[in-house]
Image (cartoon, rainbow, N blue to C red; front, side, top):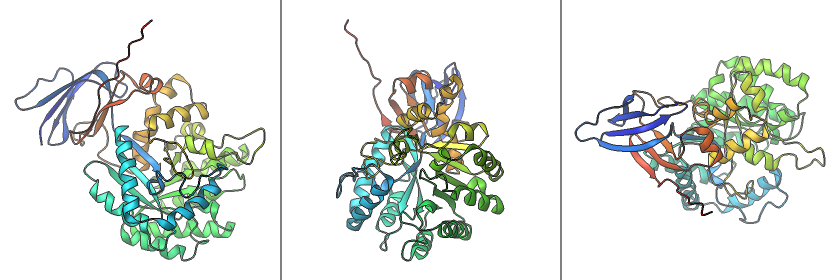
Length: 413
């Protein structure tokens, strides 16, 4: 492993450049004006922004790149998307899943992503997609960290043998247990599914990430059950509530009461502003709801929120590239988080906040940590965000994963 000296980068919000020395795949020294040593490879990044790698904290790789198979979701609703995927997954093979996921992950890597939490549908008696993703988790581990969630797309209590399939997934080695309480047949099934998911995760020592209240129904309140169970078990930092779009429709009196429980529980949240802006509010005429969870209020209350892409060219999103810059930009606009400091700190939704969501350690540009980082073609995050600055380099343990030439344009007038 070649030692590396990276010169002239601005780390996160730093106003002045510094150098990064990498030895044995880890940050050995960080500071200005470091002297090159014999045998070191030296790269000068010209004062560009260096960040910890981007983290995709919520995506469905098993369905990636399947839009139009067997048909398109013309209504644009969550529920037609589930039906289309139900038809497509009958034809899954391990080879099919692995080929599509490899393409999607390479695409994500080009946008600076090195960590991915993927939900994998386990409402399939053969668990085909899960078997494929488990193989890829090992095959790709030197380049990308895959974290897999057993996701019961069609329910735990409402799908035949749903509990048994979830248990099999846990035994096969997933990283986290999921649930989908708003899709269960009844409120009783919803609560029961969450109780089961928490118990199963505790039994196997796994994380929890629930598709929670991804609906415009103000009466969908699986979140209070999930937060209560996390609080009772003292596992809030290991629990994530994804989507929580019903929160957009909660009346303020209920939300304020709920916020106390959420704060006590310490659970994490993932918002998917691109896809949920597309999917939610479909049954409204006007006024039409945005349908994105209360990111601003949760953040101001000190709760951890990260952003995810959710879907890449599949039955729920006919577009999507995996570029998390698009997610952050849309998220800031749709949640009205456009204050100067909010913009400047928004990279945390896809870096440090997401690292908490995934329960990662050994993350960040600091001496002693693994030398995983990216360099963007901009001097700071605000400019990178505004001009969609490309990732010019991505390093994993000091090894280059991605290399690109800075963009140079000539305006000829």
